[in-house]
Image (cartoon, rainbow, N blue to C red):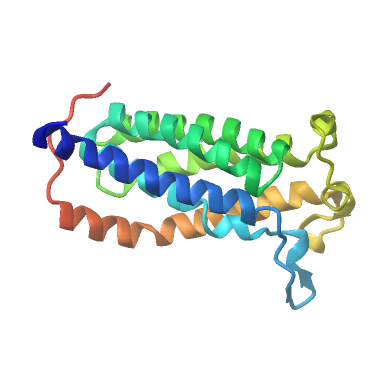
Length: 216
């Protein structure tokens, strides 16, 4: 590989490595509810630890998209998807790995598309809107496939996840725990995503102005 090609490949290599680390960690941590209480609220009915790490995947995608364009961002999504699913089978379960793969691919590709359409607006609008829309799709697909009783034929069945419990652990509406997890995880993901705007902006400043990239 020539020196020029090596330099061009660096963003792809770093992006794939970062994406793989984030998704594998999230796939492992999503198996563990947050066993803590907040007043009368039992967080185990609402959150898993994966909610705190997964938003970093959108940061990786958005930074790549901003600096190198949607084509490079999509390559990182495809490569990160393949590596992460294979590794997640060993760290989590087959069903969670499949659910994560489908949700990750759909959510991240939506994020790439929306970000690219909004890239000419204020620096914060593209990552905020794309992360919210991508996060909604990702959360619905992941928790539905990973924990819903409708997909029990895939061989993994979490009895705790499908038990009925009050929504958010306190509202007078009983739902399967995985529904509360989905809503709780999404809420935390959005909070973490908003907090990630600060390091996102810092990294953008360090990288300098993005080139005038053509939409594609």
